[in-house]
Image 1 (tube, rainbow over the protein chains, first blue to last red):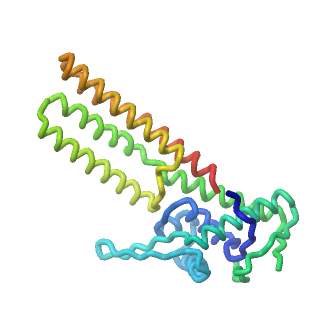
Image 2 (cartoon, rainbow over the protein chains, first blue to last red):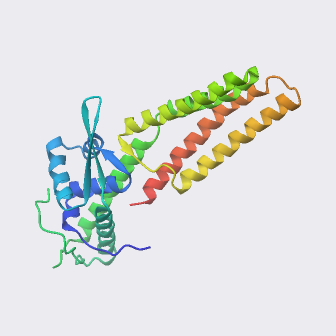
Image 3 (cartoon, rainbow over the protein chains, first blue to last red):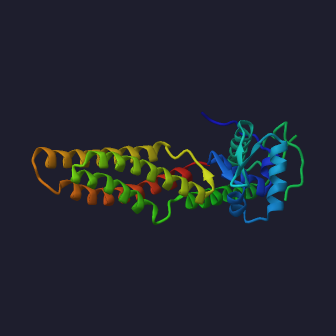
Length: 113
Length: 151
């Protein structure tokens, strides 16, 4: 099944795109693993995760283990669809070189970096 | 509404995606001790049959199950991610490993219990360690290929 190309400005921001790329490959990922993968500070990751969470793309799970709270992240169904559509849009841009993909109706302008 | 981004930016974004997937694949690859430890558990389970002490063998089965569970838990905790390991390629390698070890155990049973060749379970236990390590490395390769094939 092919995914419809849909450029998503929420996903497109470099850090958020990488967060989605990591989460799309796994069932869930711990907050420290994602932070290490991106090489950013907690506060930076938190900011981007909050944007994705508010868009309904990322689910945040908190579990208490040995009196420590472990936070893990996973892509929601909507987030997975948005990410796959965005990747398809990027591929279309690379192949066609038009630079004018359709933009997701749910996407909005947000600080990107 | 349209977003105009140049093909170079799209290519850069795709390269970033590939980088993160490669990083994730590296993180998921089991550490050096993992497959030998699995091999020792499998080898010990088969070798214990040499004693013909079946209550001890049942305890060995329980120990093998608990040991494998603990190793997988430790590996997952180290990686910090939860993945569906049994994707297509990994499933094929895993099925081949189970079949090979089962055939080895069956051969040892036939040689020792039917033909009376003492030591067959010990030899099979040592071979099981090597087989588990080899298949473990193939599993890692399959997992890496699976991750890099998908965006």
